[in-house]
Image (cartoon, rainbow, N blue to C red; front, side, top):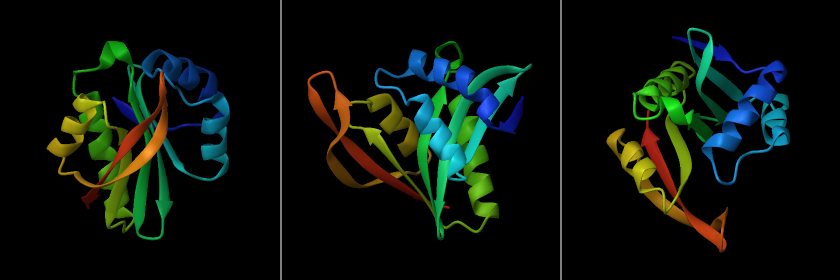
Length: 145
């Protein structure tokens, strides 16, 4: 298992995985913009194969988890836990005090996952996510680091 910084060379692999994972995936441009902006973009690899990836934006003393994704064939095997622990450890080492994220209100599995890691709901963003029939709310969650 290894964590490696995402680069432009990884975009084709990451966006192909993103399309398999999410019904409304990030575009290659979203990832490219995140890299250009200097966000922390990480890949988790096992035996060289992509298992998961994440994008985190730093802002003063907080980090905002913009994207954390586990490949379908690697889900329910602790990949998300290991990656989230890695991201939280890096944020703490950088002096960050809190991590924020948004999650689809309908994604009960993800909400439970984040609650397990001591994230608490701090608000909602109405109509934040695209959905098959209009828009869907996001639950805003935060964790003290």
